[in-house]
Length: 191
Image (cartoon, rainbow, N blue to C red):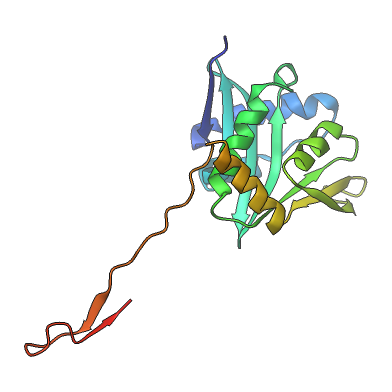
């Protein structure tokens, strides 16, 4: 049985990601992510970006950003021989777990002919909201889909039910005295 490992990106993953980009996208004649973008993900935005290894070999990755309560999953890529297997599920679990208590929605982009990715997005609760022309260049079109707040709440609850995500702990704050004197040890308190 194969041994899968998932990890947040780090600067040492740069070459592996560039190789995976070429293997997944470049081999099909598509343009690949620029080295500057990949370097930013490895060095500065690794909290929500992941690399999947099978028996120590990098086989897939997920790149994303979180801003203002929204996540943007920009790339989910798995080399052909590992597509349709555990790698995608592990990457999605790590991603959803990392953002579940930080965001209320999540955005994806995908080519119209990528039915597997579109089905995956839909299974997470995403709905297709627009077709954007010229997304990565004049001849490029991408479907933009979004998991809205209501659907994301359901996704979060499903992960909690399955034990894949801990329910957030509510923190109780103790009252702190705002004024004390010798005559009145706790004259006022704010909570």
